[in-house]
Length: 408
Image (tube, rainbow, N blue to C red):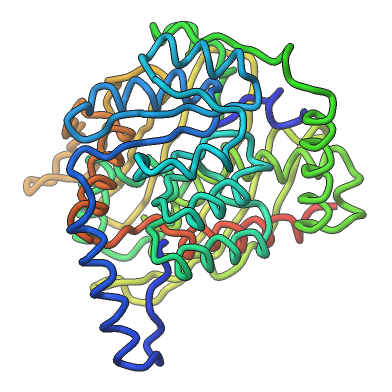
């Protein structure tokens, strides 16, 4: 997740129509890759910014039996050197294309600016590396397609970092929802204070660098951002600062919520009924139409209200609440920048005596970032499938398009 300042300035599955021999070859390649993968995965990190310093490096250090970071790359050499010294990383790069050629890297973690996610992921896959790519995976369909093709062509796994979907509490929420009756209504809300408020209390003491970034690198990032927006939402909307900000907000903060919503409710919405964005684009409200999906749910339609935004108050309010006739389920998510905060599930219903009952279930203090890295490790070392693939991430782009079509 990026702050407001940052916003401004797979594995592809084999088609069912493929020749049987192709499926066998793909399966054999997956098994072979898993068998050759060391149990302690060697990681090269692209991007030495806030998320890397506050979240990824501490998590990988805690999981030192599963991961070891062997190289760090950033366009700011000062940033990369600072991170390397602090975390005991031996190799520093300013060129990701050079770093991914190392023979002692199994996994490349792409956590740099959104504008470079696609190119860095593709070059890593082309270098026969598996990839962890932070969300948003990509902001345009051509980039998302190119990432899928790179995963398939190189027979590499590409994992998209939707950490909320790996939270143990989310699995519990899904189980309770599956046991409940048809959904009648749902609310998705993510309105938060500035990242700096939470980061300052994380105990990680990150540092920001940039004085050594060249003018040409700065211009390249700006040009990429402009081109991405023009391709994603059209030149006319891209020239509107408000709509450009809305799209980038959907890609950053919004992609957490919309991906979470998709998995919880069984897929993409049927349609977007309406959308509103504030005059500065900092607050977005959307109404979706959904059909019930799954066993014992029927096919009646229901409404989902989605709202997201950033303000200056030091509060992190993010939840998904689902209403059925006989049960209300809610999952609350706290800031990911302070490790160990629980994700709770609240169940509201009448008990067998007709008395109102409300219970809060805290399944674990293990944070979602830890869980996702553990699941990724298992997938890479055992050949298990991933759920947050490039193909899955492309669904978010469709939802973004649905929303942007209602804004002008």
